[in-house]
Image (tube, rainbow, N blue to C red; front, side):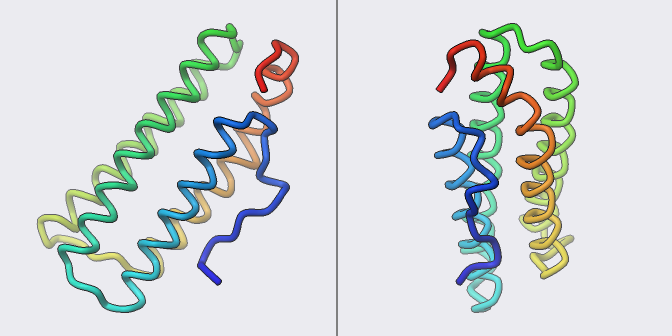
Amino acid sequence: MGLFVWKDDYSVNIKEIDTQHKKLIDMINELHEAMSERRGKDVLNDILAKLANYTVSHFSTEERIMRTNDYPAYQEHREKHEKMTAKVLALQNEVKTGKGTITLEVMNFLKNWLDKHILGTDKQYAPFLKSKGVS
């Protein structure tokens, strides 16, 4: 079992978003596994780069859906995405340059952030988007 397990509570009942959330969980677990098995720095850098890129792509998807449907809290949600993107990219840069490493603390940060983001802010937009026919 990985560090982070999908549970039905995470579903926002929007297929595209749920699929992407599951992929993010899988990527966090892949990074955790690589860290636990002490795979090389290059492997960790590659996985972290994929996670960072996918996070940016996922946020773009969420923001597109929110914009298209005139979600009233779009700007606030977007700002949260920007902060997290900056953190993930900074982490990626630290690991890549040797100034930082992937630790259990980092893994728990990623897990807890995604958990809170899905159950908090993402669950807030879901009813609005569902009422607009997004599924």
